[in-house]
Amino acid sequence: MTGEPDLVLVVDFGAQYAQLIARRVREAHVYSEIVPRSMPVADMVARRPKAIIFSGGPASVHADGAASIDRSIYESGVPLLGLCYGAQLMARDLGGEVTKTGRGEYGRTSLTVGDPGVLLRDVPAGIAVWMSHSDTITRAPEGFAVLAATPETPAAAFGDAERAIYGVQFHPEVGHTEHGQDLIKAFLHDVAGCRPTWTNVSIIERAVDEIRTQVGSERVICGLSGGVDSAVAAALVHKAIGDQLTCVFVDTGLLRLGEADQVEETFTRQFEIDLVHVKAADRFLGALRDVLDPERKRKIIGETFIRVFEEAARDLGDARFLVQGTLYPDIVESGGGDNANIKSHHNVGGLPEDMEFDLIEPLRNLFKDEVRAIGEELGLPEEIVWRQPFPGPGLAVRIIGTITPERIEVLRRADAVVSEEIKRADLYREIWQSFAVLPVVRTVGVMGDERTYAYPIIIRAVTSDDAMTADWARIPHDVLERIASRIINEVPGVNRVAYDITSKPPGTIEWE
Image (tube, rainbow, N blue to C red; front, side):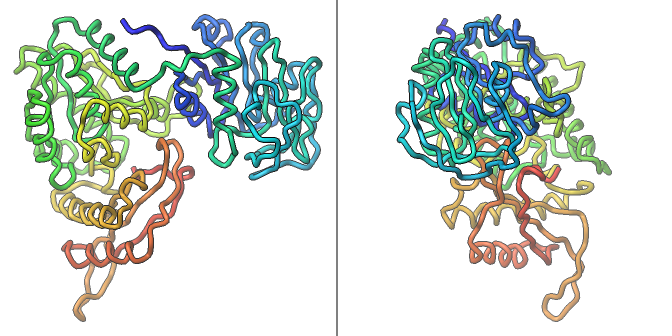
């Protein structure tokens, strides 16, 4: 079996950037996982991490009930790096000073490097960094060297090379900080001695070994949705066990235009994977009839998927394992550790408790960008690998209200127009997701001097790196105009188009 990669733990102190820190570590080819601050230090150390990173956080270290950590971690011998709040916590715990000066730093700030040491040796003497703090580290702990300063923070970076403990007041993980990734690499490779072995090839080799060990000679089925996650999961499992795998493609009646044909073409002809196509639109629509609540929709769809799989498995000789394309952000958003449950993903919180399968989730610890890279390595076609994310429940969670065949057809046709025009404008790869939403309301309009009373369509398009945060896409006005004109002229039952300019947070990417 492929050897275990070096592990870096990211301790989450409530930061909006914890997931981004973990991704930056992986971009340096070192495996990382996020753990809650409530995890006992003894449990962290027992996992034998090569390094531990403290994330930022929204609170002040002086606030009542401020997030903290058992101070035994500083004597663990594990190299430590604190970022923003994490650096302030280190400074306070180790005898430095963190002061409420009344002069915080927010946004772009000039950093001057004095004594770079190992941590900042690849960083120029003067750079712009991204700050977001009200308290200030005014004095480094005894025995720590001050590495850099800003106009308001005398100890903006500090470190003890002998103990391999470092703190920086700024956010090296964000793109606005110049040479931030150089700092992270220096900590991982030069301070902590992490090996850069977390690569696409190593991920695939390790997953193949684990799948073969888990499965043995048993039969496996994979729920293939047409999206990149399930497609990569299927290709990975097929690489591991070959014809022990059968893919079950369920046409729920909630798919995008032309999706079923594309999936069949790719997996039966290109990969020669055994594919069972189950046409179950009537079953799903029947189960969803008159259902309004989005959480109920997700759970109904999740359970119906499983029941269809169970029936398909019995027809295949009772397959024991079910492959799912669960990703790391799915786990985080569905609630785990100290994380809030934002919404139940159909393949995490939506699974029935009496499910008959053992799960295989080869992508469970990966972010979307890692999944795409693995898909390319496995030889999946570009139109699959770079297809924009699509929710497991499909169009059901893009109809805001109850679901009918008529509303699905209106939304499917409008969504196809959005996709066609975004591709035509050469924006498809730049935008994380772009799609149509149908709220079940009617608006008054006028067409051909006649009054209309029809549906509005909302266009949603966002940019993102990993779906944990997102910003609304600044689509050129002429592209939006073409989309709106085509939808109104080509999709019967629509007389109005609007554009959603909400970021995440406060909104989620999907409307439900």
